[in-house]
Length: 231
Image (cartoon, rainbow, N blue to C red; front, side):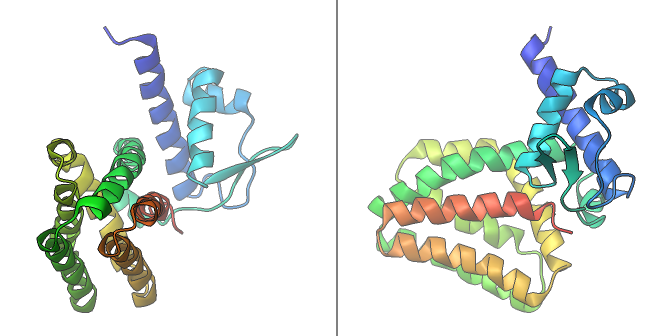
């Protein structure tokens, strides 16, 4: 039997995704005010505490904002393609995975900067070059993306970073497929800005700067999480 906390998480994830779907399909347009908590609770058939968890996550994702005494408003409407690549029911898991990755891979990048060998650096560079080639050929580049991040995990010289990543590979690649498919619908400049984030991580590891490596990796993964919701 699921614990009350687990049930609440699942219910809040469902409420989160249903509100998000209503925003994407235009039921709650950009800049519009969301219904009150009482009204939304009735529409979604969830308790107000569960609804508040869902709304908090939407605020964290910068999809909605709260104005003191005025309620919640839609800040931006994610592109409809998002639901083509990630059907409702998967988005909350993807976002939780990004959150976990930002913490773990940020720490891993710091350790990689301290411990990397020239061989490790060459493997990371191979992944980086593969990502650049994917931009030039307008390919998805998921394999190169995974090679880049896995090479950094291996550079930690700690098997738990590698095994943790491998245990999550299905969720990680789902998120990579989503963000990179969405990137292909953007301008070349937008795609290059994502590549610049990868290069910043590589440069910090090359310079053996653990503080900067952690910061750049966390920034990259958090930006990837927010890019899911670009209009």
